[in-house]
Length: 217
Image (tube, rainbow, N blue to C red; front, side, top):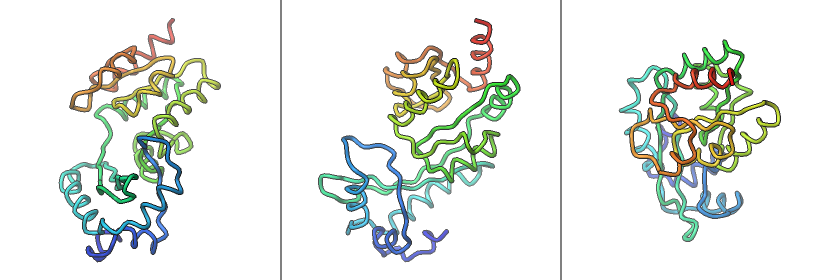
């Protein structure tokens, strides 16, 4: 709300500095330090608050009809030129059947976790709705971090099932004992995801039967 009420002509970098706004890194094309990204983000002279406001309004116009939704905003940086290339806002809602699937898994004694590139504060609200404990939520998780989370869970559990639907999930799917690719989100998916998947589902509720079958092996 503060962003929407701000002066649209103000530089985004100035707004971030004056509000002491931190940032998380979702992904990078090459190894880049947080300091380098911060220098580019906080010194940009191109992007304005108005650019981000337009993104937020356009996404909210579509998502406001949903009963549960998370909005996340960010920026895509051109690190060669050290500028903000694009401002972005995304809106997400739980997959149909996700809440029921998680409830069934918990009734079987199977713990569930959330790992996403979104910020933790946003994910916690979604986790509350889905019934996932907040201490099992991992935010701002890059593909490498997701894979490490899977590896850490493998130290604690006999088998780890990774459910993913995008290229950012590929590393974690390859690391998991069982990889499940969800096709519930419309759109084409890279062939690498299909190659990494042990199972492909149309609805995340199908994951429950997969887990039940694993428990009988």
